[in-house]
Length: 240
Image 1 (spheres, rainbow, N blue to C red):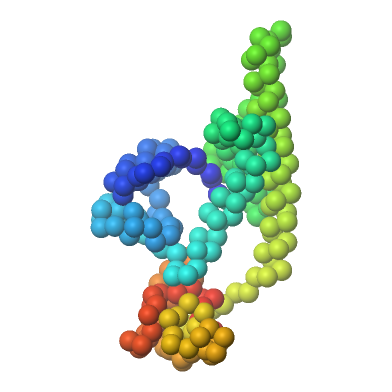
Image 2: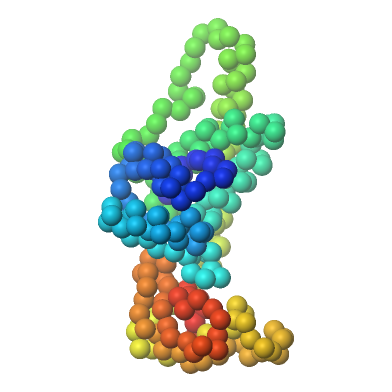
């Protein structure tokens, strides 16, 4: 997964589309699909119609289940940890983001055994340790040394993090496959029911699955009665 750094603050759906085109499409081409949460910018008519014209599918994370886009969640957590552990001056954390981003994209993945940089360009990048200058300006030398130290620490952290994350994921992974027409029970923890949470049944139903909505995220559409206030598209971990 290639990490692209942006720092928007207050941004509209149109601004988001422009930013995506300038930072992603410009360098990597149009994506076949975009996975996102249900932020108003991504559910807006402008955003949806823009990508419909480009032929790009939009796939949203399921209700009450942000882990649907688990790769992005893990990437964000890794970047937050990199910032906390590798920035000598926390007040200047933005200055270190380019090198931390470079380190992330140049670190081998536990899944592919290759770095995102290599998979994207077919080559390993030249890193700061491969260039040398005799008698550098002291301030320049300090600047490069600081960034290089942050990079080295970041790569080591990412390697350890990838190894730990893979072991944990494999330990708790449970693949669920369901088909249209199948009857399922629905987990009630996110339903608005008149009973107190401690008294309500763990599951309700059964409900009939209509279809799989997004194969990539494992979301299913099913029919519920009007008594339930919840999104009818939920992840495979909510039905049982």
